[in-house]
Picture 1 (cartoon, rainbow, N blue to C red):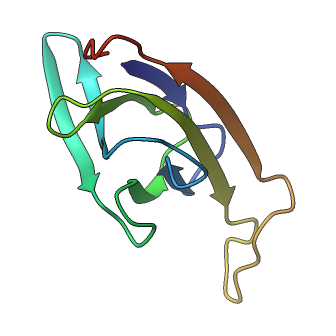
Picture 2 (picture 1 turned 60 degrees about the horizontal axis):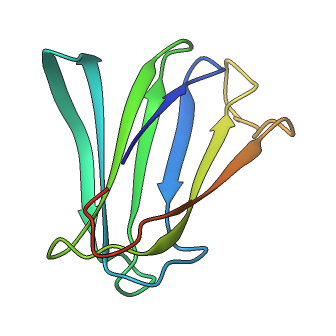
Length: 117
């Protein structure tokens, strides 16, 4: 399954994760670019939360469109929760302060009958 996300703030730090829940071994891959020329920015299989996955990206410009792929290993399928957490830096000069405008997007998706989604 592919999702799109567009960064909201300049110099954003982004965490994309299935660590909130999933009943199969997930893999997350994050791409930018066009459909015919995607470039992989990051991918992860099995993060610190076991068989679920998490990637972190930093210093992304505002308006960066990301394509997020969630797949199963090896071609497993099931339920998962996808969290996208964006945190930006409010100050231009040290010390840097984290903004209080961070937010999360939660998405539930279910794949059935061992169909790769």
